[in-house]
Amino acid sequence: MRDIAVSPDGTELVLLKTGHKDDIVQKFGWDEIAIEDSATGDTRIEIKQTYTYYSKSVNWLYDWVSWPFDDIILSSGVEFTVSGDKFKSRSVFLTINPETGEKKVLTASRKRNLDKELDTPKLIANDADRREVTLAIHKKESVDLVSINVDTGKQRLLDTANERTLTWLLDDQMRPIMRIEKSKSGGLHQYYSSQDGGQNWTLRFQHDPLNEGFYPVSYSSKNNGFIVVSRPAGAEHANLYTFDLETGQFSEALFGDAEYDISSARVKRGSDDLMYSSIWKDKLEKHWFTPQDAKLGRAIDSALPDEANWSVFDMSSNGQTWVIYVSSPINPGAYYVLRNDLKRLRKISDARPHVDLTTTSMPRRIDYQSSEGLSLRGYFTPSTRSPGNAPLIVMPHGGPVSRDVMDWDGWAQYFAHRGYGVFQPQFRGSGGFGRTFERLGHGEWGKAMQKDIADGVWALEQAGLVNPNQPRSIVGASYGGYAALAAATMTPDAYQCAISYAGVSDLPRMLRQYDPSDTVDAFVRNIWTQRMNNGRDDETELWHRSPISYIDYLKASVFLIHGTEDEIVHVDQTTAFYEAAIKAGKQAQILLLERTGHQIYSDDTNTDLLVAMNAFLVQCMPPAPKTPPTDGANLP
Image (cartoon, rainbow, N blue to C red; front, side, top):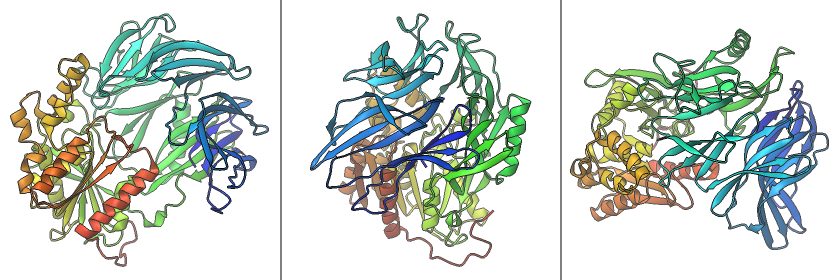
């Protein structure tokens, strides 16, 4: 199951699924679309695809589905045309008739060879009364904002922007009023507003999306602004606000929490009426804005397991039908549908049905203190093979302004299944706990942040969760990769193996990728200087916080992985460390992932990466042998 949408009246669902390969000679496993009754699950229409090697075929891989009109389903994706030994593809935006399953292309790119990348049109908004959809369509060096009538195909050009444009936000008249762009370096998001429907634009503000956060939830027609989740200057936590487009000012907080940052919010379909705000404490908790919705929320809570986290994925126009997505630390996720008129919650499908839930491992929260008394926490996932006597993998998160939660973590579960215990420390500087805790990490790269990780491992030993005599490895991505390399070089006896994906090895080198004479680059550079060294732009000091400067002390075997198209942490951070390690006679391996950036969006790439990391660990730190469980497969 890849996507799902509710019909406007709530009586039906459209499901997007990846087809199964039941005969590799005859069928390829193309995407399938099904329309079913939301109450019973009975399928009314199935749109399947067949590929043969011996005749011309046209097939589709869809990105998503949406059902905004009574009589039209929307989707976009890639169309593949095969004729003999000729293969062509094009990006398409199409409508599907929910009564017949008939597809109609609204707009498409030119056909290209399979080795050429395609830019798929992005859905920005839709309007059932106007019978229009608004799309962002990429051109060679620009992006057009276009409205298309779904009946006639007639197009209206609303705006044209540069290729760094991420998205637009529209008012309730389908006019563009905010445009969001990436800076040239990619490190900032820039917000422009328009008071005349996109004719003129004014830069309102810019921010580092990994630091401050500004997440529009909905346009509010009541006051010509946006309901946003943000942490304005001076605020301790990210709260829910209204942002005034004319003044660029935030309202008083609509909702906030005294201890945690707000993570997201949800409005009702077709309106700006708030349903709930979400807060990741350990689990996902909600603040409801109406008694009626709160009552439904409590009913769902009581019907699901205690460890479950859920959110509204889609809903009908009348609010009586909700599709919710449910996940937990031991379940990668499933879709359910709530029919309030029938008082029924029905499971639709697992997101990843191939995962054997009897083999997952329930993590537990570990509360501990740093060496100077700072209250910290972490999450420990025991090995499913030998819970009390397994080698340990320490897995610090990236960011560093990020955090882990008590929800599905594919890497942690994979390693636990392979025979390792996994510890995820929430060191100072982590996000989600407020500005003060985040700022405690400023200037502590390679120092107190590393000690927080080590103190967490010591706490695991004191709790009897890990055997002090078992070997240990440290694995991380991005900042977590830096923490892994720093631990391996600055505390060389602590870990037997280290894996860094897109990790920083040379802090001065990272700062040099920004041009201080460029206003935006200088802004981003200052943010990183603040994080790394509390604002002190001292290359000598930063060099002594860089893992590459301690290469001679390295004892652990190191596996270095990096995407060749990483914009945030350049690939030379990894290649330079690898070359220095080899020159110094250290044990190091390197894997460069072509056409991969800082984030991994491809399931295939993620799978290949896990297999490669496991192969390295099996040689470097063999997992625990499988032993019969004594207290059940999952620890509480």
